[in-house]
Length: 169
Image (cartoon, rainbow, N blue to C red):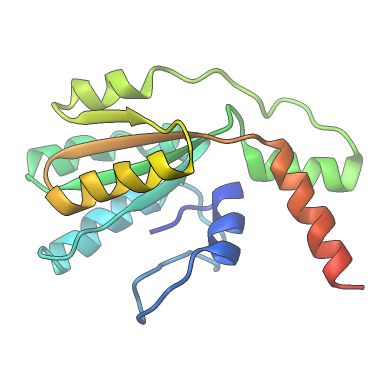
């Protein structure tokens, strides 16, 4: 499940789906913060299938209480948080349309401590290879609550916009 935000824009462009209904991205009304509860529902329907929730830090703030639902019902939950300390997609659109942004940046709590508070495991990604390793670790064991924090550089969003503009000409 991929939540709405800058993470959605990147995942839609760069994450391959090899089977139908294995990468779910909400493109309807772009409802932010649906992915954690959506993953819980999908896991109930497919208990033997490892699943990953991808959320930005803003969407995580809006829906992190759902972790208690997963914990209470013994539903394995692995969450990959894109940490850019802001509402990345809103900031991105403001930059494109207004050449500035405001009131979209925030400070994050310690996501590792949040994972531990639910009896789970928390990880911080230190690079591409490290991300792959942490995803494999969490998805192969498919147990408990796992939060993987991937710090992202917001400036790459604007680089993607420039590249897409170049490609469309």
